[in-house]
Amino acid sequence: MIKLERTLLGIILFLAIWQVLAICLDANTIVPGLGAIFSELTGLVGKKTFLVAVVSTLVKVIAGLLLTLLIGLPLGFLLGINNKLFDMFRPVIMVIQAVPVISWLTLVIFAWGIGFRGPIFITFLSLFPIALLTTVSGVRNLDKNLLEMATLYRVPRWQVIRDIYLGSLLPFIVAILDVTLGQAWKVILVSEYLCGNSGLGVLILAARYEVNPAKVWALTFLAVLLGLITERLVKLLFRKVAKRWAI
Image 1 (cartoon, rainbow, N blue to C red):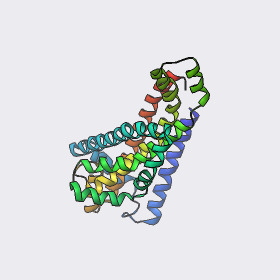
Image 2 (tube, one colour):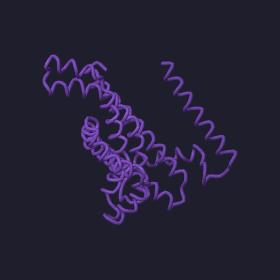
Image 3 (cartoon, rainbow, N blue to C red):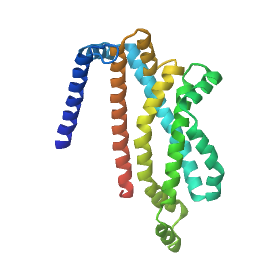
Image 4 (cartoon, one colour):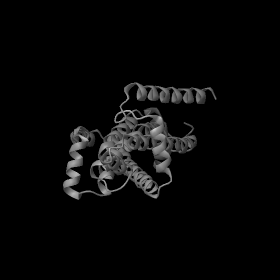
């Protein structure tokens, strides 16, 4: 209860500072008042275009994360148990990690133009190195004594993978989700803004053309709220899964 009260107090303090800045700066193009933002929020929530945009962005976030996990985790596991493979692929991973998002965006526009696939692909490229390298680190930090005991008692290979490897990697997977969930929302919105044809990023672009900063901030706050909700739901899901391995 105390934690909830502190969270609410922090939100109230943030909103109060925002309103003070809006009054003091008197610059609606930078910091619009809370009244204007709330008015835009209420106008957006009931519209079909907004709901379609939310679903579109959410689907892209989920698709980008699933693609990252389905490729990054198994490949990270393989590279974690094989140093030669890791040394071979490490330069490629470093290059992918170092390339700016804007460069990927430009290449995606050249390849596919404006559309649905671009934001998902860019999200994957942005998150993939994080998932892979964190998994490699998790595999390398595995307690070797557990593997020796499993070998000594001739534990079946599938059980070793399920109970030892996967059980030990779960905290690292949770860490990956902690980092990538928020990052996914940011990358998706930027990608939609520049090369998307639907989603919250496209609505923000439209608000820019309308010169409507209150609408931009309203959409931004809604995106942040949706990001926090999805992060909370995923954490609750993984907490239940982690109990299976007593983590």
